[in-house]
Image (cartoon, rainbow, N blue to C red; front, side, top):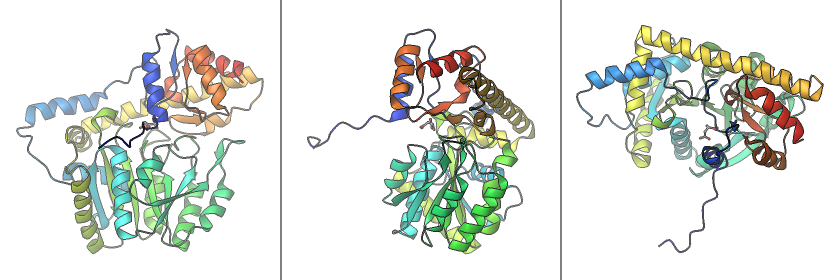
Length: 393
Ligand code: LMR
């Protein structure tokens, strides 16, 4: 059976994560995988989630199946969190998924079923796993210009120029906030211009919303999705709870579809269930139930928001400290762009050779394309990282 198989290419991000775990050097610094860390390098369980898990443990009296689209209370709470409490629920279809990755794959299958010849236009660069996840559903993938490495910002003119060339009916993949891997986000005026272009050209937005609340705030980070819902007839959102609820390994996210009308929303809802059945039958429940309990309970929701605000605030402070440290090392203001970006990531000018030297000589782990996870820094290691970065240039 398996004689023809060749070894799988190791996943870049996950193999760096593994190499870091195995590194015995005491001064090692992990700026690779997109996981939030405290100043001590820990990724604690969010207190409100812990409390919700305790309540779940006390109250849950069965583990029988829920169904293909998961916990409908979770789906409703996530839809309201993402789309706002006043969105027209009759036009929304949602399904609980194993992580944001499950949502992306489910939506790709939905698009493939609806329009098999659609091309997905992904930003260049984008999260490395977008490519295998979306193309495994059999869709064509193309890229559009997104990032300007010289300014550390979105190359907006080039992005709009490229998107104008997409054919009507194609799909445009957008990062809702905290662009992975660059940290360069659209501002509100740019979201409006993109929305107008998508509407005018008949393009379908697929928004990956993996870092809601970690950029500028829960409401601010949802702006892009909510604005698009007012200008395009239909769209899809792949949401993850991994980062903002810190339930990474428990795998929970949601597919949310904004349909043209209530009738289509019902058909799509059934189709999402059928796709789930063909992929994983039914999603894992535990973290979805915990997230639902948090979102439905005013006290727990408030505590979660406070903890999320703390994570975001720490990342923003680290951004300032890193920019200052790199500016000092380079005797320039050349790293101010880091402060203007949002979320866990920034992309530094860096060669693969430099990434290797950072690892070998300084025990610093970064993604070889220059992506760093800002949350892996702390007041002690920021200066050390900036020095190592300067020394390996
Ligand atoms: C990342 O971008 O590092 C995370 O989303 C983890 C992953 O699955 O790649």
